[in-house]
Amino acid sequence: MFNIQTHMDYEGQHKAEKFSRFIITLFGIVGLIWGAIIQQFSQTVYILGAGFLLASIITIPPWPIYRRHPLNWQKPRNIELPASSGDEGKKKKK
Amino acid sequence: MHTVLTRGNATVAYSLSVLACLTFCCFLSTVFLDSRTTAHVNTVKVLVKNVPDYGASREKHDLGFLTFDLETNLTSLFNWNVKQLFLYLTAEYKTPDSVLNQVVLWDKIILRGENSALDFKNMNTKYYFWDDGNGLKNNKNVSLYLSWNIIPNAGLLPTIRSLGSHIFKFPAEYSIASV
Image (cartoon, rainbow over all chains, first blue to last red; front, side):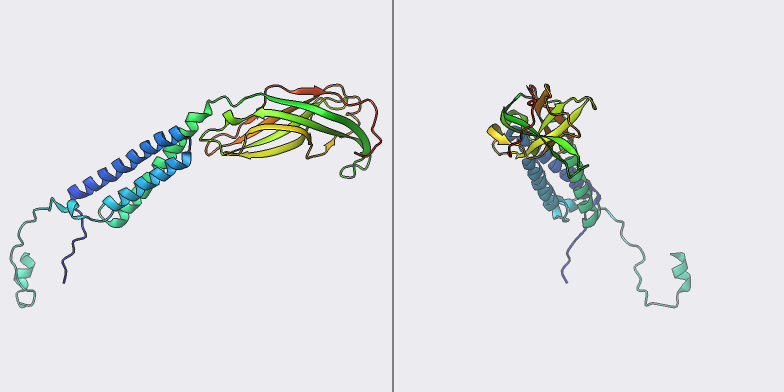
C-alpha cells in the first residue's frame, strides 16, 4: 500500500506553531491598521479571518516540510520472529 | 501540536484571542472621544389641554401638544465603533408637586451610513406629553433638549445630552379646540 506519512517531527511542530502565531498576529495587526484607516471594524475582522484560513492551510495539515528532522532511532537488536517459540529464557532476557 | 486536531484547536483559540485583543483596541481608540455636539430645537405651536387620562387615573390631567423644529449635524459622532445612534427629545420641567419631570416626546434611530445631518421642520411629537397632574398649564419654564445613546461594536453605551436646549412656556389657558 501507499506509505503516507501523517506525523510532524519535533522541529516541525515547533515550526508549525511559530508560523501560525506569526501569520495570525500579522493579519491581525494589518487588519487593525486598515480598519482604523477606513473606519470599518468589520474589515478588521475579515482580514483576521483571512489570516486564520491561511494559517490553517499552512500549519494544520502535516505537510512534508514539517518532517525534515527525523529522529535517529537506534537499530533494533535481536530481530527474531515471534513464531520461533520454545525459548522462554530468551524472551525474559529482553 | 502533534496531531491535526491539536493544531486546529490551537489555531482557533489563538485567532479568537487576537480578535478579542483587536476589539479591545477598537474600544480604546474611541472611548476618550468627545461625543457632544449642538442641536437646535425650536417649538412652533404649543398648546395645552385638560383631558381625562384613561391610561392612569381617569382624572383630568394636563396634556401638552407641540410641534417642533430640529436642526443638528451628527456626522461627527460616527466612527468605526458606532453602529447606530438612538436620538430622543426630552421635555424637562418643574411642577409644585415634583422637582424634576422628564417626558420623552420623540425619538429616532440613525444607522451608520444614513443621513445624519438632520433638519426637521414643524414635526409632530411621537409620544403623548402627559403631566401627572396639572403642572403644564401656564408653566413658564419647560426645556426641550435632544439626547443620544451611542450603540457601539464594543464598549460603553453612553447617553449624551446635546449642548444647547430650548426653553418655552405653555399658555395660561386650556385649549378647547380639537388638535
